[in-house]
Image (cartoon, rainbow over all chains, first blue to last red; front, side, top):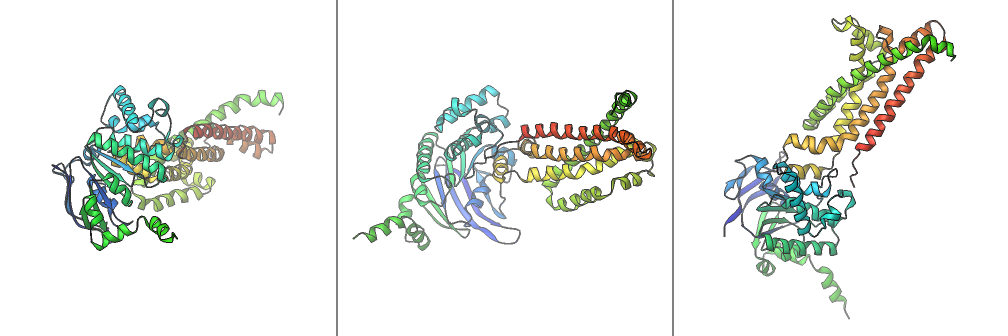
Length: 254
Length: 211
């Protein structure tokens, strides 16, 4: 397996001197999905944002396909990496079709190619292009917006996809549908995915590897099965925090 | 107002209305040309927002008659009354346009800017594909406020001989002829209303539904 993303002792401190990432070393293999777990403020998002150079590490380096992200033009780098966030960040003044076709537009594709591509991707994320293509983001539900966000991220066929709590704001049923859709899509497209989430269930369902961050440090880096059996205290307490409802209900049974 | 009055002054009213429009229009053009780029620059260097906005604010508090008076003795400017008028009106128009350009861009949902940057838009593309279209209705609202203010203030420009509808008003006041005052004031009010209505319409058209 080839390394798609490598973090080499990546540290990041704010101007005020607060350490958000402390010497993170991690290799993400090509075509796999890696979930980055951790509580809010653990540095997950910051780590993700070093990959497309939205954040520049204070020390250490990040390599994408063997090249340091600090070396080249950030614009070129970013156009080759898909990016999906919880708030979607869809452009409210663009139709769904134009939102999806934005990166191809920046890359100078012809309009016919852009429309064809955006219809193809809308179909892939489960939206009918004929009825959704001309709509504006405010005319969509939360789940539909997230689908458009994903289609937009995939438009120029990037090898790497960065996802920052993409389904965090959705209701559990919609979230499950989105996870199914993503799993099927990733199985087919073989993208390298770095998925930031605080949902253990989501990580177990979608990821080939699970990484746990705590206060900017890398605590664990396991396969889902290893993760669940880990005896590391931070991992155990993270696992304990889930399915408490089920355990609580079982305990109250007469 | 009698038909006789209109036949006597109609031509002059039309001429002065055109002059009024020209003074206001030129000032709005200059003010937009200055305030929109400066407003954009302030969104890139927000630490300058306070001092720059402060200067524009001070300009706006200078009484208009005093402003015309201050500009009168300046070289080149003082030679032609229309120059003084346009410069003064431009100064008054700066703040609303500047403030709305800055606030309009700053008010855009951060996640939209975040994704636009992360997908590889250059700063320039971010500006004309995302920020300006989304802030357009705000910027236009500033332009509208500025225009209405300037149509009013432009009547004072007659005090330094720059013409415009203020001329009729000043003459009416001097000769205690209310018909002349109204002959200047009514078209000026109509101009302000028309500008307000037209720009308001455009503003609503440019408004982007966010959620």
